[in-house]
Length: 260
Ligand code: FES
Image (cartoon, rainbow, N blue to C red; front, side, top):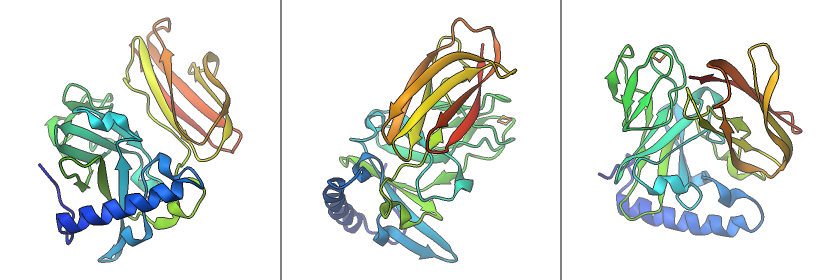
């Protein structure tokens, strides 16, 4: 299935995107704009009282989106922080979704896409790849954002409310973020993805509920961009822990992980 943006004939949109992508390759020479999705000034439109921006993600930068079942989670640069993290998923061969990670029951972050569904670890609601409720207690689908994908293309375009073009004016399109680990709960290995707006010295550790560092995961200089680290939690007792990221650029964030 191909999804179309309103008021944008597919061929026109495809041509425009190809032109846009060519332009951004040129922009890559001077910075790191190439490394992640992009939003171009001409892609920001007024619709009613709301500004919308079109955010392009290329599979070259997010290879997991090349395969069915592949999924990524990110805070889109230039989007309102209130949107939180968005999960982009190739839930069928040629169907993508862009969904808010917030469970519609009580707002917990849902887990990553696995076995054809998202599961909320808090009360076990389940959602299909397109956000539909498969199992309660949630009754409303995950918030969804329109996605354009044409078979054969190596990118998808997400229509994001409130997105501005400011991201292309800065030196980096990345925002600093610490993502929810997956799987969560975890019993063996769990993946923690994070991003840096600028080069920084980074520390990430897993802490007990009393604040004692139990596992040091990262302690080094890293470049702006997306990163991931795998944490082996198989030796931890079952229970709730926290992982925290601190950086030399002033960004810190803590998230909760559960070991089962
Ligand atoms: S918060 Fe997700 S099921 Fe309750």
